Length: 119
Image (cartoon, rainbow, N blue to C red; front, side, top):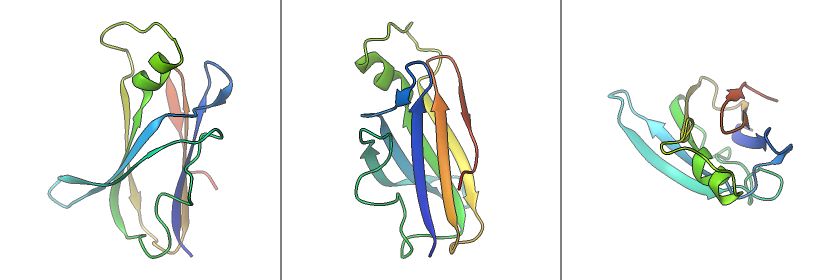
């Protein structure tokens, strides 16, 4: 049963990125992106109510996750320059097998980020 999930860790504070806003978009062949859903991460830095995409929603194609990094760190009281070095992390990725589990973790600070395909 395919699904898409995410998990965001705040590496500056050593904790999950509770309260970070994340938007999932489907990217068409023409490059136009359509928002599928927007969520706010829970106390564990994950989505409430299940995965971003469940088995019935998974589809082969190009996808985009938008992680609202600067607003998250400002809400935590971090003094950021204007504009912030990292405002929104935009991550484009592909789903080649709609029956597989795609996990997209993000490790982030106000100055850096990394991601990978998790398990």
